[in-house]
Image 1 (tube, helix red, strand yellow):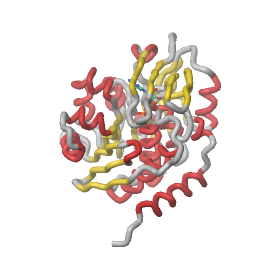
Image 2: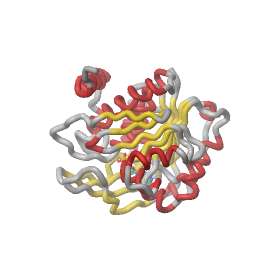
Image 3: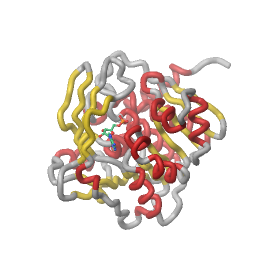
Image 4: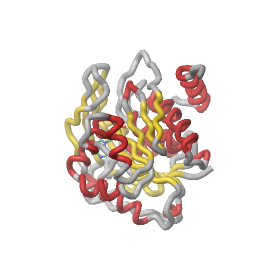
Length: 303
Ligand code: AMP
C-alpha cells in the first residue's frame, strides 16, 4: 500500500442547484479528493486556508484520517467559489472565483512528502502544480493532474508545461474539448495524450467516464441515481477513488486503471447525492464495496 499526496484548493463554496442551495460550505478540489481517497489509503494534503476557515472543517478532515500538516493557515480570507447549475447538472456556471489566500500561496512540501509515490495535482493554478512537481525529491510512480476551464483559458502556457510532465490527466468533457480545441471527444482525448500524459480520463457526469490508456479505450457509465442534488466535487471525488485505489494496490497498469475508473465512479456517485461533503461523511467501506458490486452487475455482459 502506498501513500498519496495532493495539492489543490480548500474552499468555501456557495452553490445553487434546482434542488437547493448552500452558502460557504466546505469544498475545494483537494478537500473532495483527500476525503474520498482516504477510504483507500493514507493521504497528505497540501493547501492553504485563511484565518476565517472554520475549525470544524479541519476536524472533519482529521477525523477521516487525512494528514493536514501541509495545510497552511495564511493571513487573509479562504478561497471562495460560487456556482450555479440548471436542470442539466453536467456543467456548473461559475458565478465568482475569489482566490484570496491562494493569490500569494507557495506550497511547501514538508518532511518526507517529496518522496510520496502517488501525487495528485488537483485543480489549482498550474504554476502551483508545477512548483509542487519540481519540489518532489523523487519522481513519483504516478502523477495525475486535474484542471478546469478557468485555468485552460487563463494559464494555458503554464498548463501545457505541467501537462508535459504528468502520467494521467482527468478532465470533464467540456474541458477536454477546450484543451484540445477539438469537438470530438475521442480525438480530444488522443490529442491530450500527445501533450504528455499517457493516460487520459474524461469525466462525463451522468454519461460516465472514458479512459484512454496504452492506446485503448474503456468506458464506464455513471451509476443510475434517481436523486442527484449537487454535482459539485464529483470530479475530485472521482479522482480520489481512482488514485486512492491505485495507491492502495500499488499498481499503475492498464487492468488496475480500469478498476480504478470504477472506484472513481463509485465515489462520485455518492458525492452527488447531497450538498458539499455531506453524503461522504455518512459513507462506510461497506457502502463502497456494495456499490462497486452494483457497478459490476450493471456493466457485465457475456462475450
Ligand atoms: P468539481 O469536482 O470539478 O465539481 O470541482 C468543484 C470544486 O472545485 C469546488 O469545491 C470549488 O471550490 C473548486 N474550484 C472551483 N474553481 C476553482 C479554481 N479556479 N481553482 C481551484 N479550485 C476551484
